[in-house]
Image (cartoon, rainbow, N blue to C red; front, side):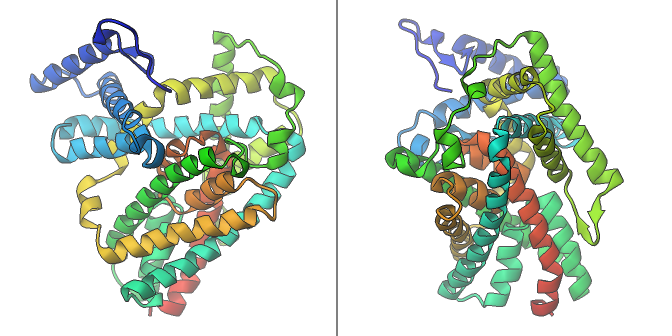
Length: 440
């Protein structure tokens, strides 16, 4: 995703495929349209805004020394930068509302994740599926245990009792995000304590956001570590055996047409729809445990890949669509994430010494646990720490996208969703018991 430079006029500068003159034209159109109230807040206006903002911060973040290699690059700068523009009123509230509608109501982020998850799972050779999943779930549990331990240690350093650390810090950070984590967890807290759930939620969401930022930063650092120590990384492959034994299907060059791309999109959307059908209507719970639709989607994809049901052409088509999104539209989506899901002012207000130390220790604990357990299951340490560790201590689907983008490991999305959704579901299951034991 590096920008290309042409000799001569600076207006020939290329930003991820978009010429600078075209970017300037888009900026002018949106700016004057907003100032004159002649630019409608709709799908077109929101997408144009995301192109301008996303490509701007993405280009700067990927060009800054140190920042581009160790502090999240364009990925983190795009999310935070877009959020900052909203907080300063540079992006108007009406424009921000249009983007939020696009992502929250219309499901643009869900489409993005659906394509990445489908592509990443269908690209795994079926010979390695059982070993990959069988080793990954224990990896996440070990990372969870280490995260709790280091969170308590961090609390001791800044003088916070272990009960408060577990309830108010560790649980929200590892709960699987906001909608599937902090919100239902606050309801459980309210039922146990007989208090307004908003009391717990208001602090939990701020702490969760701080933990998410640390997860992004450490993801970027791990990417740098992988570049310095190649033996610790599979460059996006989790299993060492999978990275060294390339199959004939991987070697084969697939010519994908526009029609094939349509098949790829259809395949991703069909599995996303089926996962939601099961997760929201047919079997939303197994006993007392809620199962996220993404978890069903992943399980279904694993099954069809294992049974070799999906034709090779369709798999190649999904990958082509995935490559286009990640190569050309990544920062467009990340700008939407920053506008929709990040409150810059709340993030700044939450930056206290206690929050910083405990959140950082929680994230580091998850990384350490997964790093060392990776050796047991023959996974690459960097990929294990990112997918199994960092993607369990972020803010859910949006956090996973940000972490994998900053670490340049988006092809780990399927594993990351397992860590986020199943790991978060495990924490949610334990939350009631923990609140009963510690919150009264």
